[in-house]
Length: 276
Image 1 (cartoon, rainbow, N blue to C red):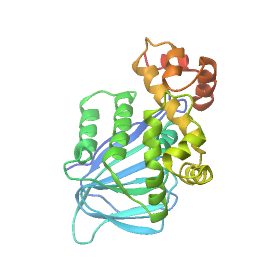
Image 2 (cartoon, rainbow, N blue to C red; image 1 turned 60 degrees about the vertical axis):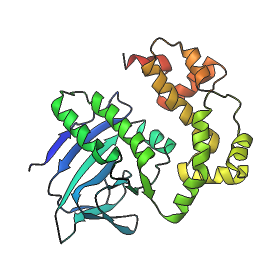
Image 3 (tube, rainbow, N blue to C red; image 1 turned 180 degrees about the horizontal axis):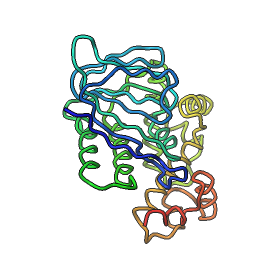
Image 4 (tube, helix red, strand yellow; image 1 turned 135 degrees about the vertical axis):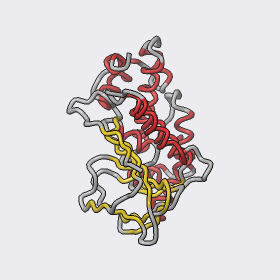
């Protein structure tokens, strides 16, 4: 069985907010040592057999129905167990929207994930690879969409196996993040209301968000709003910018445009023209 892979060299002025550098299936995973980490986000999961990964000062087994997401620059190593073979699937990705997207999903540190055998995660990466092999995705557009879908599926079905403090903190703020996503159109959300919903003090809530996402709660909410706005801009080219602003919780279009430009580098209409 051959090593199957798709590799795309990102451009210096790459227009994709989330790009895939590589995706592949390795039927005979060789030992990997990366003392300086990988320059992009790197996902690795077991297809068959079992391996062992070391990162963040700990070593973990990686059996089927498990994978690990390495942050850029995270030192790590992995290898098969001496007693058997190890087949892996992998995905490397980056882009200007990657960090904000992962932060909005609570994925801010390298972590090992597990899932049920009947979860969509079990076959998603293999199907992504088959799709890029069957189609001429020269510019990586389809792979970019698939990477976005993969991260949302990982967030939904993956169970992170993280060190205790981070895991407990994520459990504390997860209900609030879900509530934020449901209430993005409400322009009256403030820190006091967030604290009330979470059952935590404003000070404690601010501390948790800064530890997890390196952002205060309201700045995190703005990231969610701009992410939703990007989705609407692409999926609804007929919708005026001022209506999109209202849908994601801005009282006026000028404030929305200013925040969008600050967080993405371009105004909404220019962002929309990139995806006709």
